[in-house]
Amino acid sequence: MYNETDYIEVREQRKKIMLLTAGIFLAFLIPAIAFLLRKPQWIGATFLSVGVCLAIFVWGVYGTPIYSYHRFIRDIMEGRTRELKGRVMQVAERPIYKDNRLLYYEIVVMDMEDEVERVVLYDNNKGEPPLEVGRSYTFGIHQNFIVQISK
Image (tube, rainbow, N blue to C red; front, side):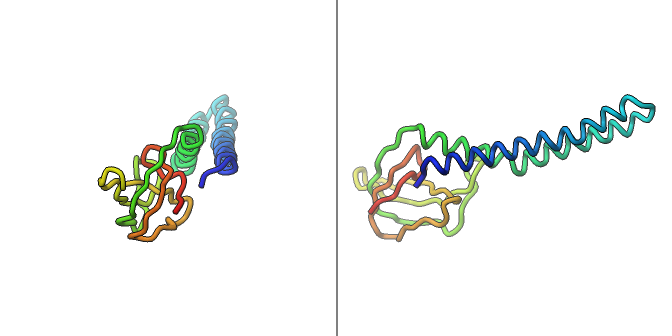
């Protein structure tokens, strides 16, 4: 499900949003310094305040989710995975905001080894989960995140 191209794409998105945020900040910082060196200093302070607020807004709305997803994919690519064999009991209809970071589909799986229900998470960025309720699957999981699905 995840491969090197996913990681490279997210890394490029992260670079772009970091450059955009820095560019916005610098675009407001340079005129602010020019105005601060002259008499009406309140204009420079206003430029600086607007620039800082806009940079924080762009980073908070666009940068933080990209950064979180970059870390998520890096952890999956570098981390250890284990196998879970089980029958799908329930698949969430809509993705849920988990860990105050990203959207995931919650999937309830009956573990065939322990006969225990487990909740695993399917990445919303990969589309809807290709699972049918009642069928058995083998999941490659990293913590409780699905990395691979096979029948």
